[in-house]
Image (tube, rainbow, N blue to C red):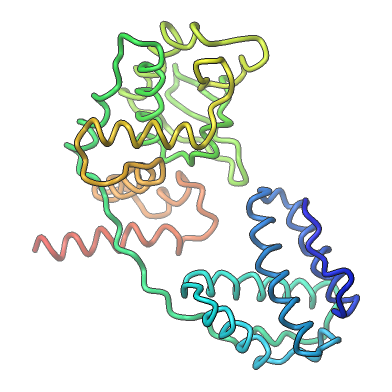
Length: 299
């Protein structure tokens, strides 16, 4: 974990210690390195701004201090969504400071998040999904792998970071279940097309690249190594181009399609939340809002 302290600057020791204790607590909770890095970057900027204002005590920070910092970020050209994320980081730091007695008051409680306009989801139709699945060459071992990847992304809504780490013992093909091991562990059913693609890949594709060092991982590259996030993104993008889909097809787009098509088919929002591994229902509700908007448009 990176050390985001501002050693050598005038920032007070309790602010410095609080930041590093907060980041360490995230690590203990099992947050991903990328998440911890993101919090660290946001909060290092915040502490740097505080240092420049001449504030040396965490309890001297006021609502105006935080608002000024956010305005400074805005003037630096950051988007409202990035500013909102920075404020979330600041709020979490101050709550941590209260709970762990680094501070007696929380000035961030009275700072409102900027309004962020939600982007409209751009979802593929079922016919486009079908065309996408037909693009890999099933006479080629790597084509078998790519078909299994595309089917699994759409069938389970698995995140690309989870897919790269997927191991053979997480798959129960006879029962049609995948055990996704991440911050939000979950069991997700696998449909017939994904099961067939995986069986075909294990039977005739994967054996050409497997080696003893990486044999635990499901998806391997041509050298037998664990696939990277970028490799999977290239696979989905290439499939989208071959299917003549007029936008970039990414693993996250297929996750969006998985959730939206489930809701269109009558699935319960809470069930979709659990399948996606969302910690809060509000994150899942964007798909419900898309579905309602689509129904209204059709009507």
